[in-house]
Image 1 (cartoon, rainbow, N blue to C red):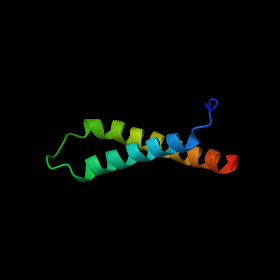
Image 2 (cartoon, rainbow, N blue to C red; image 1 turned 45 degrees about the vertical axis):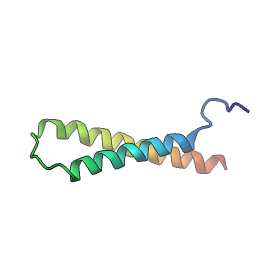
Image 3 (cartoon, helix red, strand yellow; image 1 turned 120 degrees about the vertical axis):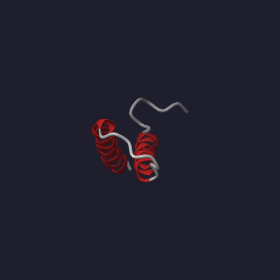
Image 4 (cartoon, rainbow, N blue to C red; image 1 turned 45 degrees about the horizontal axis):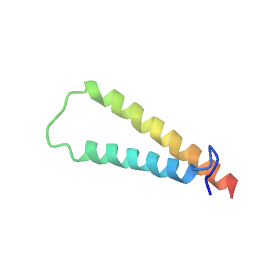
Length: 64
């Protein structure tokens, strides 16, 4: 059965969690000191992914 739009909150939460984990791992495992120019963008990506993760988990919990 094909699900309607907006029914894949678990998948969205998993993708957001993967993005957050990937960015945090990339920041923690950096061996070369990078410039601070890309850090602001990285923090924005992490923040948006965290907001998406929380929103997806809340929506997933209200659906069930």
